[in-house]
Image (cartoon, rainbow, N blue to C red; front, top):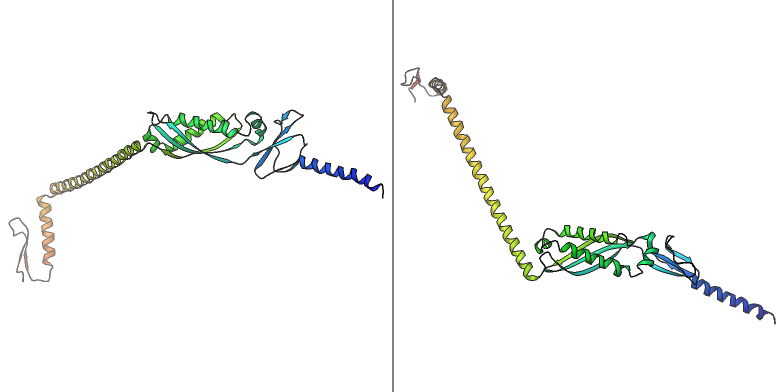
Length: 271
């Protein structure tokens, strides 16, 4: 009994030390995350191996693990940019991105956990200023929104492609012009719309008039052809045919062939 405490105390101490060791060494990486391992006594950030994936990991207590969001993320950025004629434009854009999974170690080593603020957002601001500066306020307000969005994406991608960042999409959510410029553009667009409607009605009327003229010309040409083809002999033959058909009616009559002034039959005795 006297020896029991002497054996138990080291065992308890060992268990305590083991628990502390495990608690300091255990790392749990959540869903959609990845861990960058930093080895204090073996070269620092591990860049030549894939990052630690989701789940439970045991690492030496003197090492560290930096956890990154590996899924797609979104940042909304509001910027003031200048149009081609120097007017101040407010631009609101969303950027969809994520770190390149297999290059997380290099991203951490070179850009740190603040890579979004240090690299991505400055890149999209620079791209937006460059792209918007090529267009007038009228183009920004109306027809060029999709083109601007695509150009900002391409410009930003060129900047971040060597920065271990995967750029998925850039969405231009809003373009705000100065109120006076916006009102002037809306008036101009309304006038252009009214002008297009007037031109459409004018063209429609011209086409309708042309259609009527063509139909009238066709009828005139048909009558001319018909008149040219009706000789005296044909008229007499047609007259005889019509007279004989009329003679077949129930009313009593006498038909005298060739007794008319024009050689056509005469019909006598209509009752």
